[in-house]
Length: 249
Image 1 (spheres, rainbow, N blue to C red):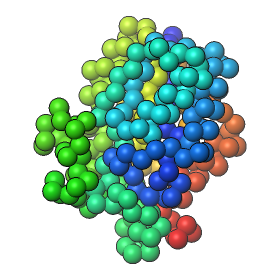
Image 2 (cartoon, rainbow, N blue to C red):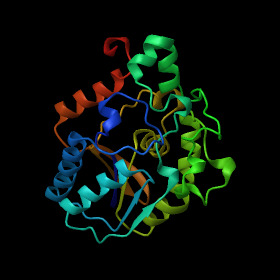
Image 3 (cartoon, one colour):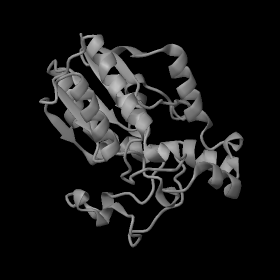
């Protein structure tokens, strides 16, 4: 039996400001750095060890990974970065404060944009200066594959090739894999691993900086558990759930 560990990056500066972040490349807050270091300490104290690491193209995930590997004294591990593990692209909502967006469009509409499985947010256009096609890190991606705004459904479709073509073969070879990415790319992998329905996945709230451990048998998950204080994790999950609600306006 081997293990797969998934971690959503530590709190970002825009998580702190309650903004739609998506593919905007913001850094970690002070709390986020502390969360990343705490995750690494938890993994070290529980004697986790890894053979390979996967992360996204975005610095909040990369820096979280650096902090974890430094805390575990294994910064030498091979790392694969892929755009397929980027956060869900929030289109024209990126940069907007969630509570202010609720005040303008109503909580019901914002919750549809945030949590509906297959309803995308308002789209940005390729001539928008913030479109990822203008960023050289995405030069090798076909232009028509760079999103202008995604529902969770499109994020799942984008992330799963990374799972099938890269991560799953590593696990099948007996390697221990760490994935440090984002709330929605993690939800995409968890949806696939646990066979969660389209309807139920929208209710899964993932806290920042908390290791999610899968025990695998023959590449198939037999158990999922979260490392850390259960009460603190529950509070963090509730906070994620309440982002963009009227009580936060």
